[in-house]
Length: 268
Image 1 (spheres, rainbow, N blue to C red):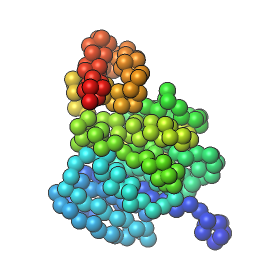
Image 2: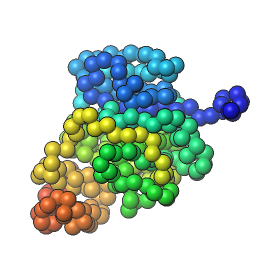
Image 3: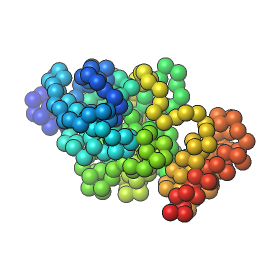
Image 4: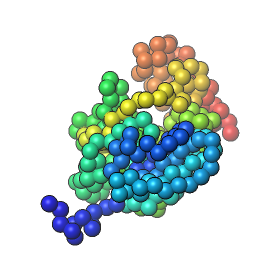
């Protein structure tokens, strides 16, 4: 049993959800929310609504706009808890996730950001099997739905999501990678934890991935150019070679398309 004083001292927690076209209020149940949350719902209306879900405050931000970076920032700028989790609308949290997250930060008191595992019916994403410190060379393994962070640490360094990258933006991918890169650039400590906190339900198609098209490679190159203005040619080349079987293209062709996209950033 947790004593009253201990419970009172436990860090508060909010889930910040990037959602699209929610027409009812069933999402908190679908997500299995067991904490306060802010749901950024990009839809066809403008309104701000508050509801209760099993004793937790759920704030809906319904805005007629597009862009996942903008959506995440709308929720992020209104966050009030000690710890925030970034989420999408096609996942379901495991039971007791608030205490799982708190315990992870308690075990790593120097951590500003912790990246968790996600359950998939057919595993495609990287799975952390042993805790490790996240560095520049392995930052691209992790997406936004895996991120838990200390609010004060992010705010003190002015970290937010890039509005030009991600679904619905000019460049269709990478807002999460740029967010984590910015955390590293500004000295935050990031760990990956061998703990699963949510399952991907994958109830809808991706809002940005339409196959390995020319735009995919162009946007990928633009992402590398922003992440590493001096090293982006190397990043484009290693990506093209390392993932040649996934892309099912000659590495040189993938590299050239990525470099064309990077050139759009470099010339600006």
